[in-house]
Image (cartoon, rainbow, N blue to C red; front, side, top):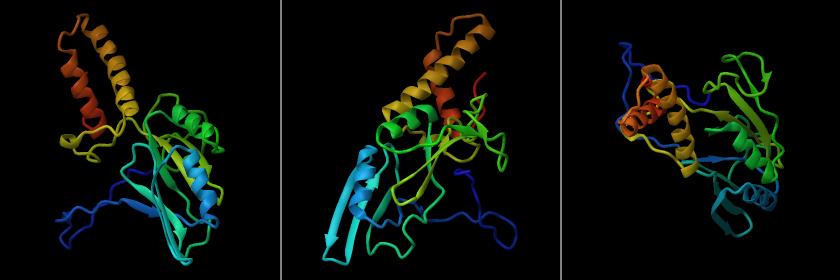
Length: 218
């Protein structure tokens, strides 16, 4: 899974807390034809941040997927890896069917959605029937064969996100979270048999808990 969390251990077994933030911002991917790769990622609607050629021996192109805090680099003189050898590049989405549709419109050949019942389990056709986070996927490759994996996540495992830093990467993500909160709140009102005048607070609690992995309000 893309959201596993590992801690370095001291000799006494306690987790070592880093004193400085280490933010992963760029991943280099190897391509054979820079302009072809540029056309492909432009077609997907990813933001072109830079295209800096320096003579014949160096060129860096940077793209950022919509709503992503991290970007990709490719070009000339960027990496010695064989073109197309990058794999397991995760794109986390809140609605895998919608994300797949957008990528197909942009020219990517995306697999059908599939799911697993748990880590390491066989792939099964379709989205997870229960809509559980981390279990629904789709894949595609760029023209060089670099492999991307879509993974649907709507509720994080506990401890992955600080509840004090809850944020939404795009208006689409926020809208999707509001829809899930509205559906859950409707079930809440059915259980209580009463109209909840404090629904904004309930929505807010639900959305923060969902993103941070805290228990959801009942």
